[in-house]
Image (tube, rainbow, N blue to C red; front, side, top):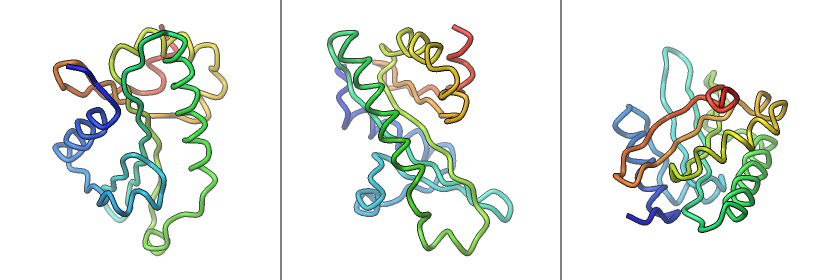
Length: 145
């Protein structure tokens, strides 16, 4: 199965819903700019997750460029003002990227070359397999490769 960006987004949304996240309606996401926005209440706090996604790209060079574009998109979200409805309740914001699994080996190389930035961003990584299965990875996992 070809994993274009819309398919990656749909599979990650399904995955998060199964894990108990409340997904923001797509019309609200466009205001945030992220491809996927979700929240989860943990005790008296909210976890708020913003994810940007990329689909399959043919060449390693295109994948590397796509990955760097994702990082730029995430950084641009980190500086945005928090949504008003979440200001009244303690919460914390997390960021993630969603990619087809074919990025996995290249992702480790790129992350190792940017280890300082990678540590600061603490991204959650969602790798989507051709079967449609979504795997969640911690940012630290890519610094070990």
